[in-house]
Image (tube, rainbow, N blue to C red):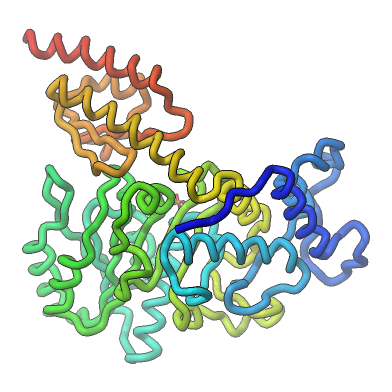
Length: 413
Ligand SMILES: *Cc1c(COP(=O)(O)O)cnc(C)c1O
């Protein structure tokens, strides 16, 4: 994995050059597009915008509708669309090991849409190629998977199949996988979407595809594998050498990754990636007024989002981002060492920045005071800490100190 860091001024130059290649609503005699710049009473031409490339793109408001790895797309905004293409290239080829230009993708509103997009694509593929009925299609995932798999299954009319995990190591229970898949087969499910996580939201646990797929193959001939790296995609590839959940593994056909989780980009920065030859299944041929047709769920989307992610990746370079992540992992290590010392039960994947503390070992008041997030607010079993950019060692120390006080109290009683 490698991409070059570039200077602030070079980033700025590139973004303004891109804007200059876009159609400009101010002076382009644009009469036919159902789009325009941002409302000008509120968002007028502040002088500092010359120094603010992202805000300038936001103001000029380019639409990135369509899928620019597949077709040229709307020609009006080809400047900033090229930045999206460059962004997808880094994510697909450098971070997730896709072959050069061997993928399609787009910047989606978030991980939820990217996950829905994947299931939609595979469902249509099974329907078109094998004449499958939606009632014959299932999606299988660990009980720790993100709830968007349920949204998607519900929307698409396919069957959700949730598999239990061991409470302590959050690993899939392979015997439960086998029996649930056998049951599903008996009920008429013939086509399977396998939804694996690179970093679950609550635990940061990472699924192991080999063992999972060994069981799938015993029962199903037809399956596709999607990887939900919404949370872990900008962490795990930088903190481990494991490539099993990347395109290096021929079993993996698509990946979701979110910029607005770890990359610190604004909301609206999910990414959907899939191997070439699949995105056609979600083409909407009726989208005749969109130049280059549409392959996305959302339709119109802001070019500024793609530009923001590209700018962040360029600011750090791959080495800089690795360092940043390594700082988060070190601080997480520190939290865990202290918890071990206090004899507090927790789960943590050793190369992730999430610590889930057993609810039995932490006072609810402390959890609330430090905004820890519960797995389930009705009946919490775990409270999690996520070591993000704003989390300092001081905050952690203060938390640990408070935790220790109540811990002593618990021991005395
Ligand atoms: C946050 C998250 C999602 C959903 O992403 P949104 O951007 O909130 O739509 C999906 N999967 C995982 C693992 C996540 O952590």
